[in-house]
Image (cartoon, rainbow, N blue to C red; front, side):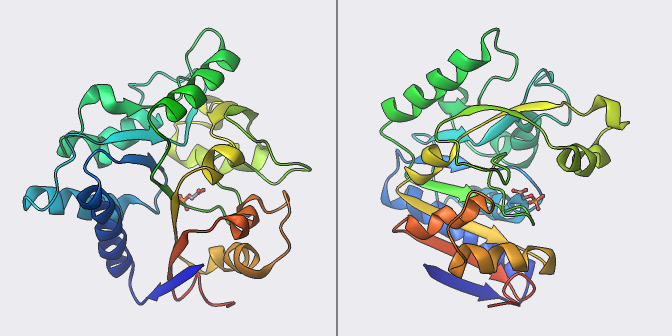
Length: 241
Ligand code: PGA
């Protein structure tokens, strides 16, 4: 694994923004796997800056997002659709038809998951997958469990996740209780993976990811089996290494 540490969140944002854009410069029709959460926001900001400078063109890029809530209007401010438009898509030139999300409002959620996997395959596969990590080692909505879930699937959100995410909603009752997420196999098939982690609360999960046992109790640990993983960490997230 390529482990890079930085002094500030801003530096991580710059490095990650360049890393993602470097992929697009090398291969203009890249397929990018994208993530939501507070971690990637600065990387997206720098991707926008590089686009505004004319350094990179996204017109041939395709994207797949990791996850989305079930039964939340895509226009709701808390949907991951809204998040991605507000933080990236509205400011760069990825054609709308090249942007892909799991549809949490699909009539048949299971076949939606199967179709998503087919779409990823048809696109040629994800060239680079950007990931955050939960303090419990989750990646996307793959929470600690007794086994790895391979492909995109429906998840019942854990009480703790609902509680964590309720800070964005008016009340805890408004937080969706289910989501669709790419699986561990979907993520592992990406050709390259970039993980960003910021803050001491991520240090334990990062240590386990790097040199702990590979176990579904820490879903991110499976990334030890991937051959092209880059980690961008601040000093807090790297503090147990
Ligand atoms: P965060 O979430 O970026 O908001 O810390 C990361 C994650 O849960 O994957």
